[in-house]
Length: 279
Image (cartoon, rainbow, N blue to C red):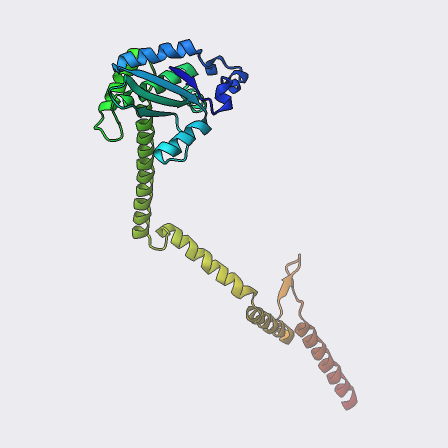
């Protein structure tokens, strides 16, 4: 039996939000089509007895999940096995809203996802539980899925995500290990974090910087100024440089040379006066 949740207005109205989407892949199958899917899956599982499928919303299945399992969250399908001896196998509750999202994620139509959920729920009604067994339910679901022409089952999706997460964790750990080893090698080889060539370059740059700083300091300027003054004094005493003109004659250009010529002229004049006075 296919039952639309009477406590959820969205379900009672036949999930108009799916129709408004305008996507043929998200259209909810008719009740007769859903009943046919249910009979096919129940026959494949070989489950005898009447099964009722409740189509509800995320809010509706969350309420059931909280009430019967103590989990306050929405899910895709819940199974409620019945007591034996009454001709009833049990009930299934499916969130059509969650089924539509999962169908979009898997890249197939809503009707396909509903068939996958029915098959999974019926296996639970048959007494199987993938959370505690050793893989028996997963193997049987895989065989029946192939028989009914269905895509990846719920257990395979969960295990695939778990394996993908584990692979990602291992890759991350491997990168961290390689980075750590490389850092250890670099620290062992060069504790300062430099190569020999880089260390020499830094030393030369430091020496050049110190030399420039000393040349620009006040002490350095004083030394330079003192040396220049002594040279100037030497020139003033007659040690000036001589220049050569175009004729190859040498002529003095210092103040000391000019003073020497004036003194010689005065001596000559004084001698001449003495001679005239003697006569």
